Length: 491
Image (tube, rainbow, N blue to C red; front, side, top):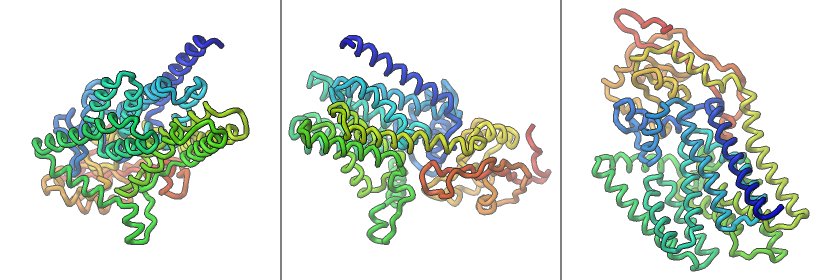
């Protein structure tokens, strides 16, 4: 195949994969996984704004760029579960395209075959699936990472530094988790490549500091700085992997280390390829392979040291390691080392795509979000104010005037005023939580008899093995009694 033919074929296959990836995930967005608290928290500020309630997360403070972008998205496509998740899926799709272009322009992966291999390798990795299927803003984070790498491929130095400064200026607005990522990436760049990129690193750090100052000043001007700092304080207090391990002697792994079952195989493939290529003197320590592996180790250590490293951030180490693996494959000769590395990549696929497919099939009836939507439409009035489990939040919010859900960082009901508590008409929650919730809200509540029970057994017995072990716990309707009785069921 001629070079021109290879170029044409690569572009054709890359775009074909990107389109297929986008269509498959958008069309199946509501099928898997179960809706969760985080995507409700990320979407709530934009939903509140569209409903005329102000841009806020009640009793918390998530001030990042992504929910602002969702305002326009919701105005165009609504705030359904499919719409929320499609925004994240589109961001991840764009990040794959930008990343493929970046590794090609930089020559990190020299062979077109392994550049194409990078796309399905990332798309089927467990942590990446979590990132683009759970409706958070991690696809936006992946796009930011890919964008920084693409900017590094700009040949003109002044343009490259200016573009890098612009991206890093807004990184504090994108989310606090990107600050340690960019800091560690710059330090590792110095370790691996020496002073070659020091102007880019210095410009990035200066822009981050300036962006952070502007961000905090904007929060102060809006009167939201104290709430934001309180949110960070609560997050820090609820984290502390090493704090719990050292001071309390507990191996606290619930949401503190990634439940990414694909990553160990991917990392092992990268280490194997690097050792094989070093033995054959085909790479040095100043190589993209070494950079990707070292970045993963250092970033993991820093995040665990300062706070925690939940699964939804694992894409930050998956992307550099996957690029390192494909770079190593493009440099390696056919032989045992390459075969073992490809076998490890296949294991990554098994523990990523296959495991999630099995989890979906084993509970396909419960994963049908249409059941929850139908149940909500039959259970609540449009003028109700509802306290709901996060799993039903999107369906409830599309139906009723207003809705609240439990915050994972703190108990929100004790923070409510008596007027807010009395405003609730309906509690939509699993039965075992109902007594505590209705007692905390006060007043008299009546079980309407309406319930939606799980249709399938859980895929895994443990509930602490990542989102594979998420399960549908059922929903039950409790309505506040009035002098004239309980409102009848909505038809």
